[in-house]
Image (cartoon, rainbow, N blue to C red):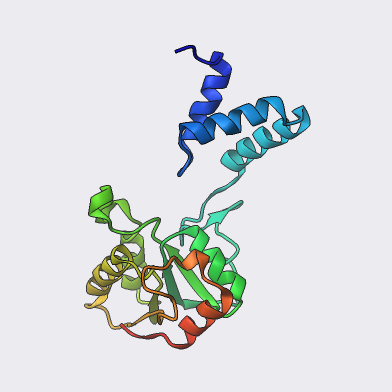
Length: 200
């Protein structure tokens, strides 16, 4: 089978690395980029990728993204720094922020325990959460993993780890549907989940 020129094949391969993008979709993206995208847009697109890689880093405190040392949430002195909301992803963090109800800080796990996908405890950002709690400045940890088998497994594991510390551990009420993804929930559902959170 005849291949595309190597520059186009490389672009197809690059698009294929995105989640949910197979060979056919990557091929369509690459051909669209070549045949339909103005050169100015291609330059802007490539510059945006380079800039993101160069200018954005991970907040050493919570795992959020930032353009400087601490993220804007961790460096905000008006927030409650004794309350941590544990989320699976940065996307979940921004979804909750859009509601404007929560005024504590966050901790991003970067995933959930999923043995079927080869994601274990050591692959998640859990150790730094325990360190924060050990330091004794945290009064409440709110577990906001998704209402899936993996999300619940992860929440239970973290709850077990926190048992030895004298802190309040709550779980967002599910208002959020079982099997649902937090990042796709509407703002009112998230608001109600906050209002109904319980001891965990």
